[in-house]
Image (tube, rainbow, N blue to C red; front, side, top):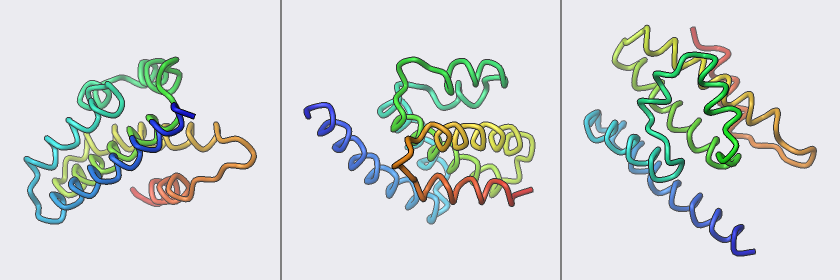
Length: 136
């Protein structure tokens, strides 16, 4: 029960952090946007987001998708942070970074969706996968 309460508190706190990130995005405050994403990644997943971004495909699969200590909720948080960073690259017309991160986002959301139990369904993951499928 304590573990479940801890996870719920973490998700609630992440929701607040995500609101701050989206606020910076809306204001086009890209410096604080990137800083907040970086801090959130470390706080909620213990991973450096820039390191995750720079992983090649096999290392991404090994160190993120199959990470033994990264729980499903942390993978969702990481996926959401990477998705926002993906939109940042689209906004800044950084095509190479965009395409590389898009592949990682798609694989991570797909991994999350494929690892749900039969009674779970995450609408956010479903819609993010649909968006990623439609983007160039």
